[in-house]
Image 1 (cartoon, one colour):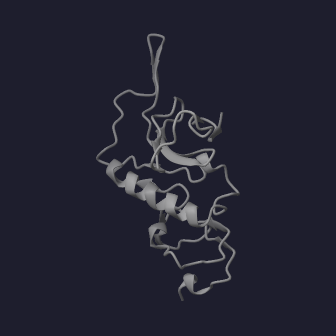
Image 2: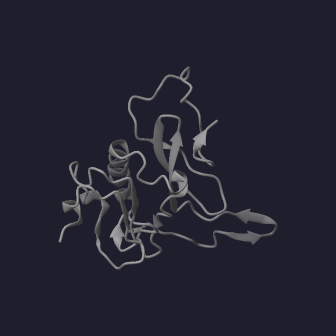
Length: 164
């Protein structure tokens, strides 16, 4: 049975299951009435999914952006900026640590930014890496072209996921 064969399905919550798959496989004509989606970490892109490579993230986030353009309410039950708790896997070859996240002679070195967040600023949407205890990295905006600095959507508060 293919869940996409249920065109009137409005809510799909598979978080407590062991279903596998890939959120990127949701086609343009799948789930035409879907309003809410929750997927487990066993699904590529599900809640708490761990990426194996940093290089996998930009194209993945573009796919999520396209999905949100089609179904803007899809993740409305969560704060979009922290909807999934996506992160880099500790088993990734891109992972590093080396004493990070510790106090040393009254100096604190924050954890590396291995968590992902979606940033929503007005009509703009992007993503950035963040750490558990430090600031976010630069936002990678998904909409092009970037609005002029005179546009009200130009500035974003990446910590709250909302416009300033």
